[in-house]
Length: 126
Image (cartoon, rainbow, N blue to C red):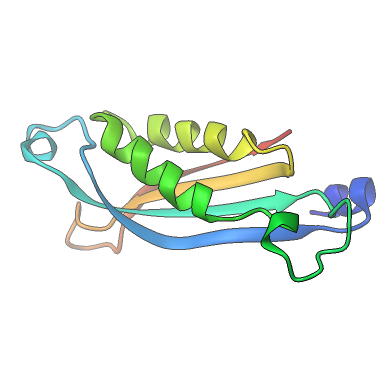
């Protein structure tokens, strides 16, 4: 984040933690039987505001777009790989001009009985 601070003088972060969705995802036969739980985490680092916030939603990045966009992506099709879904979510995140860096992860919490989750994470900077 030091490079973002050096470049912009300020960082702001919007996040979505443990957004639980039911997703058609996976390559194994048992995963193709129906949807499975998936936890999505997103961090968005934003450019400094161009104007004062003035306690007005119009001067921020409204994270409703993020939650709704992820829900639409997940519902749109079967994903073989978590990697494919994560990169699609990164594209969604970086479609907003204010976003300079996005970090997205997905986790399958119910795959193995001896660990909390298995997942994938990717970070992309504009």
